[in-house]
Image (cartoon, rainbow, N blue to C red; front, side, top):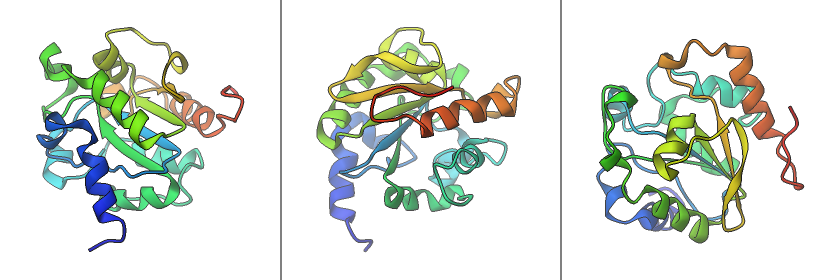
Length: 192
């Protein structure tokens, strides 16, 4: 049994019943500095039981390229993020072929669940991977970067989607936003 697994199980239950129906487990624990919020598991992620497992998804490369991870991690190594003070969850738990297959009902309770995660685990920042993850949770269209909304003391930040479906956004632009997230300082301002 991995050290801290009991704490992790408790943290994964922060979201209640909706969190337990996901094919991909939350990677959460107390004391995180950053929690990424994806939109929902795709089929490749569900099959691997790992976040951002589609080999064409740029999440893991952007995490490393921005300096948030010291080396390129594979999706199966997602639990190593906890040692870096980073966690991952999703706005919607249901697996779909693509995020366009989600319905409004898939996000019911998402905002309250994220509020509980912020309250109970107290990460400094929650970073939504894609505008649609944020919009699904809160019903608002965000801009990229730091948001006005907060969840208690937790800052909210939006980075571009890392999905292969978002290939129209150049790598350099996505990397710039991941680096801005990495540079988010104590004053709550990202440098772009």
